Structure formats: structure tokens, C-alpha cells
Image 1 (cartoon, one colour):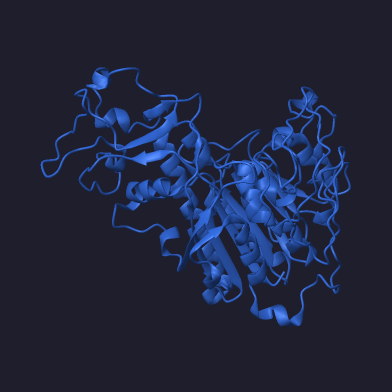
Image 2 (cartoon, rainbow, N blue to C red):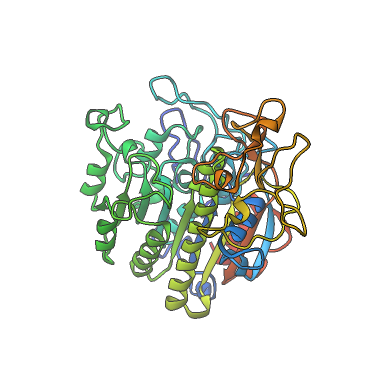
Amino acid sequence: MRLTTFAAGVLLACGAAALTGCASAPPPGSAGAVQASDIDRARNVIFFLGDGMGINTLTAARIYAVGESGELTIDTLPESAFVKTFSNDAQVTDSAASMSAYMTGVKPNNGVISMSGDTRAIAPAADGGSRCGNGQAAPTLLELAKARGLATGIVTMTSVTDATPAATYAHACHRKLQNRIAAMMVPGGAGYNSALGSGIDLVFGGGAQYFRPAANGGKRLDGRDLLAELQAQGYRTAHDAAGLDALAPSNQPAIALFADGDLAYDAERDPLKQPSLAQMTRKAVALLGQKSDRGFFLMVEGGLIDHALHGTRAKRALQETVAFDAALKAAIDAMQQRDPGLKHTLIVATADHDHTLLINGYSPRSGPTTPDKPGVLGLVRSLPDGKVKLDKDGAPYAILGFGTGEHRVQGSRAAQAGLTDAIVSADDYHQEAAVRMKSETHGGADVYLGAMGAGAEVFRGTIDNTRVFTLIKEAAGW
């Protein structure tokens, strides 16, 4: 597969010990720097990624939050498209391949982080070491932005080394190489991705264990303390919500890791310890907006939507989708203050892949979920009397279910005759699945994309996920 060129067209191969991206950023004033003719283009790009936020999840979240006729913020974006998500080797993609396609314009194999399409996904050795040695690094949008002198940032509810955020700044033959991926973020350190120039300006999320040596309770077997190394390179750090609030605009970069692994679900987090996705997004816009007069590139991921869906915890998935939507609103509001009319800002919101969430039956419209009304989380009822509907085994069934998952009733569902709205709408209820699996799987359906601001009008129709990379790059003049 032909790779998209990087700046002047340099694309370096990665060997077994590198896999670090390998391309150097052109200095300001070079061919890669912003030109005067670029002033009408999108100087700021904010890419929102709802991990696993398929159409059914988005629809159910809308009903959950504002009812069938209501609107989420993502529903109000004026331009839209459907996105095909298949990977280079699979009908149903994983997050590594799909996010890499968005970030590089290249379709990798499942499990591969921002590498060429011929890169084989090779899992780490038992000691955590890499057994890679194939493929080439594919330049990312964040690297392109950095090369042009823009400020850059990533915000996520998962580990900052997880597949989705990693695809913005790292290159690896397997998504599980998280210790190696973390090292790619540290300027001047072994394994650093030199295509990041002076480094990512802002990193908010979880995953502190991949930056800390095993002797100090982390996952690193090389003894390195990457947070200490980042501080030595001038990075400011924060570890809780108060620390995030205290970060003021500065020329110094910042990294804030609020958990050893992933952050807690929005409805379960301690707000003193872990900020919301909207809080992190507002802070990121404020800091990056002051960082560079050339503009900025920011990626914001609602990563726990995917985690909740894999666990068939529909209520948590819908709550995470609403939290993601709140972060999108926060970014739009903040940018409208900085750039009225978004004349120089492009905001894109989409998902990397679908899941197998189902919306069943012909229930009456429920309106939003409230403390005394389960809404879309309740049982299927009949029209026009609103009585609970029964399946062929004489048992009620929930509006939401899954195609795959661990909660599958064996044989007749008659034993489920005691299901109630309270049971199926509980916080930790696992919706029933048609096919028993250890964990619910991704789905292969197209996903929704919404866009607004400078250059947004080019997003229309049904497009491939690799096309999204090209459209963003063209809108920004990169």
C-alpha cells in the first residue's frame, strides 16, 4: 500500500530496536512551516474519538440523556458522514488499526500502531520485550502538526499508552508494547520518537504504571522513571483534579496522569482525584491556545465507552457517551470564545468502530432516564397499553442487549420471568447477549462522523477512515 508522504516526503523504516517514528520535524521557516497563504485554513484542529461509539450506542445515549426527540451536542454538528472502519486484514477492526487509519491515512493490520499496511502484528515476548522488526512508521497528524510549529496535545480517559492515544504519537508493531510506547514520548530518552521534535506539549489521562519502574510499583522492567525524565526535560506534572486546575498557560509542556491504569467511569470517579473528560478538555484548550500563535492539534478520546461495552454494561457505556458529548460541548464553547464562528478551527467527532449493542422490540417512547424512570434501560413494553412484553418462553426482555457477551441465558429464558425494570436498569447490570463470549466484541458497521468549523464542509457521504486523515490534512493545509 502506498504511504502518505511526510512533509518533504521522508519516511524512515523502523528496525527491531526502534519502531519510534524516526522522522525529524522541519524547523520554522522551512518547507514544512506555516506559509502566509495558510491563514484561511484551519489553524486549530480538535479530533474527538468516542471509542466504540457505534450508531446504536449513540442513539441509545441520546434517548438516555434527552429522550428520543432530543439532541446531543454531536447531533448539532452541521456536517456529517458515515465512515467505513474495516482494517487491512480484518472485516471488524480493533482500535489500534482504526485510529491509526484516522491519524496516518494508512490501513494497518489489527493490533498495529501507526505503521505501514504490511506490518505484521507481533505480540510482546514474555518478558515484555519487542520481537518486531518489520514495517515502516507512518507519519501521524500530530507529527505533521508538530513539524509545522503547532502546539499538540492528547486527552483520554484511558492510559495514554493505550491504542487510541498511542496512534497519535507512537509507532509499534503491537498495541501491547505499552512500556515502549511510553518511552516514545520522552524527549532525549532511549526510544524517543524524534518526529515529535521537542515533544508533545500536553498529555492528560491515565497509565502512570507504564512510566514508573517496577521497583516503585510500576510496569517498567528497565528501571527508568519516565515521569522524572519528563520533569527533567521541563514538563510540569499533575496527579489530581486540583493539580490540573493549577496548571496555568506556560511555554512549558505538561503531563498529568490521574491513575495507574485507566481512569474510573465518569459516574464512579472521585472528582477530587480524577477530573472529568470535559474538565481535561477545557484545560487542554486553554493551555494549547496560549502555547503557539500557529495554532494547535488536540485529540480527545472517550475511551471508556469501549470498556463498558466490552463488559456489556450498557448503562455505563451510555453515561460515558454523554460525558464524551459534554467534553465536545466544552471544546466548542471554549473555541467559540477564542475563535468566533470557528473561522480558523476544525472540530471533528467520530468513533473508531462499532460494538454489538442492540436496541430491541417496539417499546413505546420512553423519554430520558430519570431516577424513577428507566427509559431506554428498561424492559420492552407493548403498544398502546405499555404492558411488559414477553418472549416465546414467557419471560420479559430488556430494550438493550448485545450480539455477543458473557451473559447468555442457557436454554429457555423462562427462568428470567422475574426480570424487572429495576434489575435491568441497575448500574452494574450486564445486558443479555445472543452469543456467549468471554468479552463482548466489536461490530463491523459504519460509524457516524460530525464536523464543524473551517473546512468541515468536505465531510459528507460515505468515506473510508483513511480519507478522514486526508480531509483533515487538506483543511489544515498540512
